[in-house]
Image (cartoon, rainbow, N blue to C red; front, side):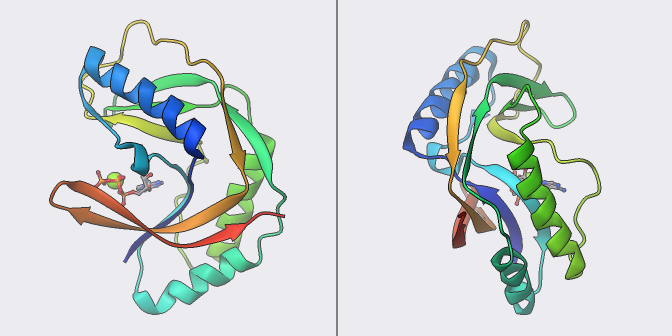
Length: 171
Ligand code: ATP
Ligand code: MG
């Protein structure tokens, strides 16, 4: 099973981000993410034996973080994977803290996560050939984070499909 932990945006955030994704794909090409697939990855586990699912859940069970808000307020483009994304200008301490705590607890249980530093972003458009010049502004988009979710990634004929397996509420 291909698994990852992520935050799923609320309806208003989805509406704002998908409008930006549609418009960007129309202007600069690429495939906009479908609204229901928009997410922010906290930790990517990769291919995991189904028998280890409970260890991933155990890592999440012990998280002791409070709910928090943060803002997505910038757009960016990564040339290496042709992804157009929304992210944060400032370091969002609570968000970083949650990803760090979850990552630590997963590593303690033997999951091999990437060492490269956490770079919070929401992929908006895939397969965009080149960076928009100049990059447009993103009106600050507020996100209330009250829970996080364990997700299974399935490749479907029509693209990727995400299946939510379980969610954990933040205090
Ligand atoms: P596809 O790979 O089929 O185009 P996808 O990238 O959305 O679709 P996955 O590769 O299963 O699906 O990735 C699920 C999530 O985990 C995505 O948000 C992706 O950006 C992130 N992710 C994938 N690989 C890594 C990685 N090596 N390190 C960190 N995050 C990753
Ligand atoms: Mg991928």
